[in-house]
Length: 278
Image (tube, rainbow, N blue to C red; front, side):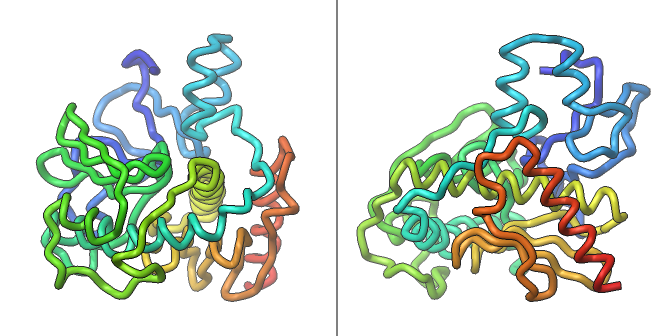
């Protein structure tokens, strides 16, 4: 979408796969590049921002692309639907028992379980073979290079079997492994918006404060997690929608709903909280 003129940084994983420690994944805050192109970034570490490109181009399709990927012209957070909590439970079961173990096995590192934001919700970074497993608005998608196969899982155990995981690889889940999944589209979209919002805010916070470790989605809790120095910031999905700094609740979903300045407002609150913690 940037026409090869820039080195593009985005929030979601992108190929090619990175098989080197410590992250085994691309870094949205990375500044260095291997050519002389300018870096365009959503988190302030580039030569210019996507917001600048949106204003410069005045191209509706480009603006829509940036909005969908939370690069600029960010969507508002709407009220959480009644199915939010069930969606968190079901996405959490799939994250814990399917996405995370699939990633750990694919890279051969048992501890490499952290997930990342993807267009429809959450998924793994790309792994060797240009493969990625992700949840896209309730559809489990296995991508291999340019080809993607998707299906709507009825049960967690079925999803694990389809992607080649054996039953012993499954861990304890918040949802029963053989209960039917509902995966309501409204709940999936609302949860995805929250995960996108939290990823953007925490990666921007990390860029501003020099945090080393990229933001991940914790598959065991479905929280978006950043480490800034000695502080841990978590955007908690369940109980519904709040941000905490070292266990202190500092920001709620309701405070951000319907606002155009939600990203800046969240950053202001978190910077104050971090300053207060020293």
